[in-house]
Length: 235
Image (tube, rainbow, N blue to C red):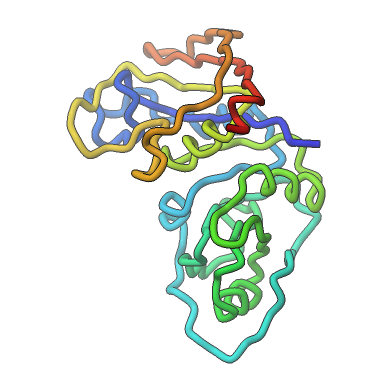
């Protein structure tokens, strides 16, 4: 069964997600981890760019390793997993967890054997979800079947969020909205896309505001339930 997918993001009033650029400064920027913990996901997922911000290592050196394109798990007993989409295997981790949550990397079959050997050497689990592009529906299926993930938090960046949205896989959107504005070019948005996907639209049939919660200091938590159109998602 597909995990229940919640997208959690924190943004300024103009939908930008880099708090260092917001004005006024420090507008409710300490709420994300608190709400993340409240939502209680079995796993959370981020894209490659955001994942690179947590990496401590360098790209793995070439070697003569020959490894099968099969899912490999260093651990299956964690309470929560940190999932990173890295289609081409570009991140050298230098660590096996983020904040105590074991890393699980989502790859395509095009990654070199040396990268798989590097992940294994650092105790970083990995799964395959496509030959050349990541199939997000397959990713959810593997996470649910192999690791028992029932509740997944999608937490950016904007391109990763947008990919889940356009695939019709997000069931709920929680937005922490701060009383601040970025107001300039260059900062990422809550939802975005690559140039290749710029004309694709999300198959959202309806959004329902389930609750509004004041967090203090003018910060709001907006919770929306999303109903996707499966026929639109398949086109």
